[in-house]
Length: 237
Image 1 (tube, helix red, strand yellow):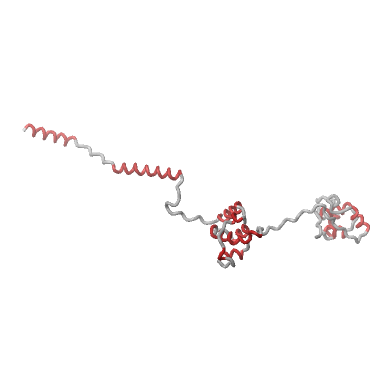
Image 2 (cartoon, rainbow, N blue to C red):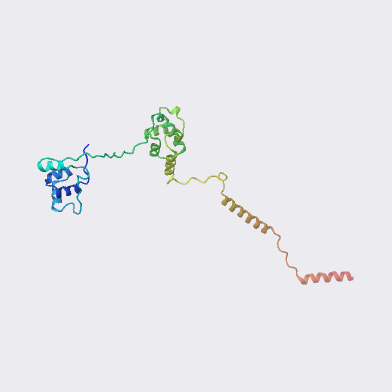
């Protein structure tokens, strides 16, 4: 694998200013077009770019430059780096130990039963399986379907509890709210119970008020005196 040159235009600027190499040699070393190198020399290209010394960063040696200056047909080569940086690994399916791979169908069946809202891609990340395996377990066409038993993937060691909770929370986002539970299936909070008790007390007070006897009608004074007079006349007789 060929070593790539760091900052090719900045390196070309330095080589143009500090060596007698031809435009073709600099272009070949920096992977540029000879006209670009000529534009660098004329000040039309890479304006404002500060030159980078390839000798200091270990990508070129002084002997290589002198050899190229003595022979116009010689093409310089990038020096091997002293320290190699590992290339970033591509993120693929989760690795599952060989001893645990037979447990994947059990974990898939458990996830399909307990978390049907999860997508196949999430199951693949958690268990490290393929979509065809998920479909076969879901449809009951797996070759070992008779022996598949739902088992928690965390217990099986296929994923961590944190990963499972993360995928469940992701799957829950955007889901429609569940239907309201039937009356009596949910416990009330302390605040709700207190509010219900207060409402009941107000209802009792209102009912007592409704059943109170009506205020007696005010008596007429004239009728009272008339009755007294009639009683007095009867007693005299």
